[in-house]
Length: 227
Image 1 (cartoon, rainbow, N blue to C red):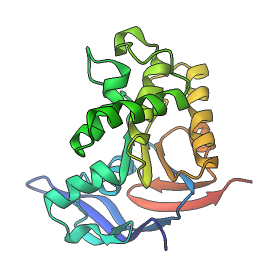
Image 2: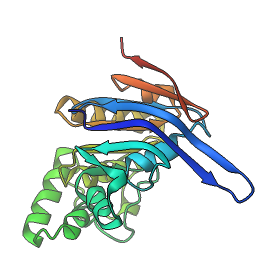
Image 3: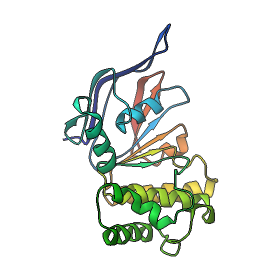
Image 4: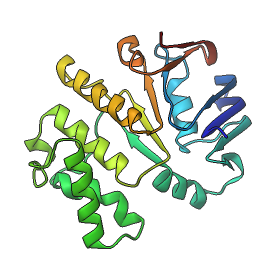
């Protein structure tokens, strides 16, 4: 069974005088353990697709299944639970809590799951050490480089052992060498069995994935696999 499936999904926005289609009849799937890139220019529908896949928005037509569940049939509380337990988010802007240590930033998702303090700290420290930040546990975001901040964000995404890591332009704010380091980490995580979905406009970032889905004007223009 695929981890996620979009079956003829559409998403339109009512702008008052006109209805604007952001996605049109999109069908795709991601298998467990795959690393897939959704690639397209600004306005292609990438952000809308990310919002639907991340359970931040709902399709207006079609069906979306994630980890065996019909997402469209779920209420707000169930969607929040999926976002917390099934999906690990990594954003371009890191979205770290200011004035908070790397350790506490990573431990925060576990707090919302009701995990006890001792286990939260142990799991957060292990996630940071896994990504080479064992000596940065007590550092706040302002004390970290952009690449280190993104690694903290990635550790936070992984600490709940999510079924899917959803990364939106994860290297967009980084210098080239730091972006390459983050992509190397994604490849290592993929090789370890993690399912990763990259959302990007950058062909060089998309090239890190084993499969690329090209969006254009809200439709899937083509798919290709790495050579």
